Image 1 (cartoon, rainbow, N blue to C red):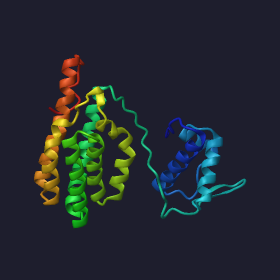
Image 2: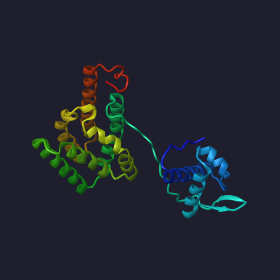
Image 3: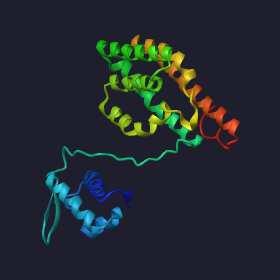
Image 4: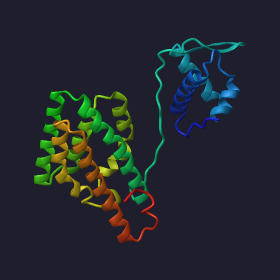
Length: 243
């Protein structure tokens, strides 16, 4: 049984269509289960299933024959979207710590790929993004915007389309980290002095140093959250992230 999360009707039918595509590939189907079976499988109405099947027929993936059923016409070259419904509370230290660890995993990989894949021109673009950030640090203007721009550039020059899409899809959550989570107005400031070294290490294609510096930046952010937790008396926070 696959549960489709509550959403608007049109959106829900698209989610079911994507889920059926994955079902076709996973089970190498030639013919789809009956409408009522699909409705039960995805916990939606038969109306939603019919709309999803219309979407698939328009894409040339399936064809429904009245009185016979729905047959799979095409299994190769399917375009499949993966939707991850996530919610994060910007005032919950546990959520912020877990979000920082997600960012650590994603961006460490992006740094590695940027060092491997970025062209000389793209490395110059990273240097330009850092120069904008450096001016912002000096002027204390648009700091979060320029910091965000610099880190976005790292994902861009990694030259991995799927990783960048994952980052963009999660950015509505990750963006919290650039906009005073927990009301901490100076959140992330302690890591700013290390950004030049991070940029320089990526440009030199020095993976060991780049990852070492990046770990320091994230660890400082985690320390800030833990300091907040200690001052506010929130319990059980140390179990969420490594010290």
